[in-house]
Each structure stands twice: as structure tokens, then as C-alpha cells.
Length: 103
Image (cartoon, rainbow, N blue to C red; front, side, top):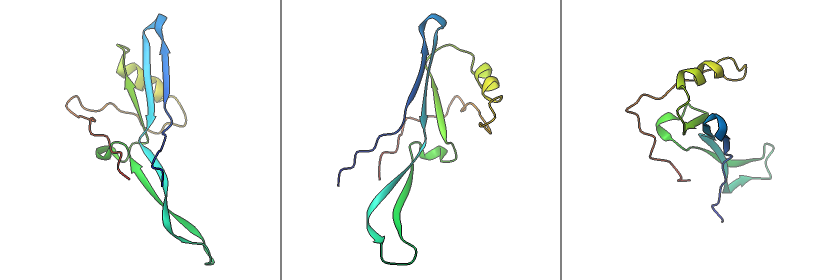
């Protein structure tokens, strides 16, 4: 079994305006080999949902800010997008360095 999984990743960079953001998903579903019920009335495959940052399982996406753009202004602009239900800044002391890559 080849355990290579690729998560979508988006970058928004405008050098002239000093804008540099990265967006990446926190959740990813994978199919697990074995224990697949093919001959039953309700066939299904085993899957597992992983969170890249386990301490924030409830978060669907993270935006990494690599510039001095106002975070409060970004959150204000994002709150006007109809498909975003909530956006917030992580507390200054919160660390998201421990990324979960275990299946």
C-alpha cells in the first residue's frame, strides 16, 4: 500500500501589495484497505478522517499569514463571504507546530 496523500493547498500572493497568504485544509478523508463489505446489501469502504492539526479538529481550513496585512481586516472581509460561517484568529500563545500525518 502506497501511503502518499496530497492535500489541496492554495496560495494568494501579490508582491506589489505586500499580500502573502496560504490556505490549507485541516480535514482529509482517506480510504483504508481491508474490511470492505462488497457482497452485502449495503457495501461500504472503510474510511478515516484525519485532522492536520489535532488540537483544532473543528476547523475546516487554516489561513497562514506571511505578511503584515491586518488580521482583523482579513477576518472582517471573510465574514462577508456567504459560505464562511465563522472565522477567528488563534490566540497568540497557541502553537500549531505539531502536524498530524499519521494514518
